[in-house]
Length: 85
Image (tube, rainbow, N blue to C red; front, side, top):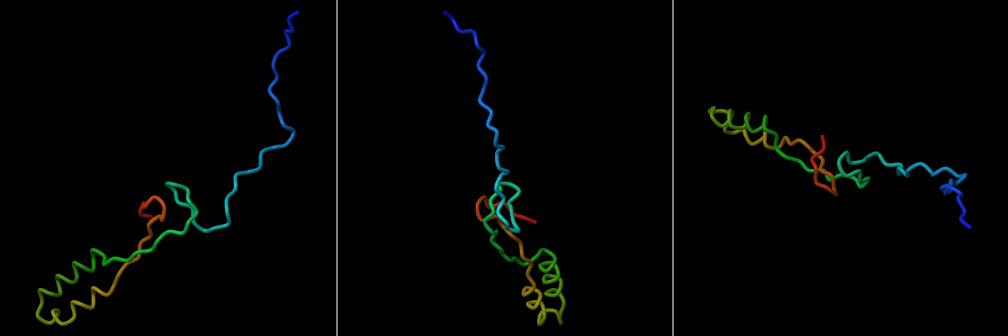
């Protein structure tokens, strides 16, 4: 006696819930973590150029250091380390 019924995969009557996306304002585009990024600051390239130009002038030697106080912030993902814009 052989039973020739075809196998029917079980289909649940319930749909899968949508993927969980926590209510945060940041998701890394590379690793998709929701941990907040780390913020660092650096002296920008433009400030270095102005600093060198002012150092070459006589009066600028006294004021050139003020330019080094101007920094720009950038963010880095806390998990994968990718630089974010």
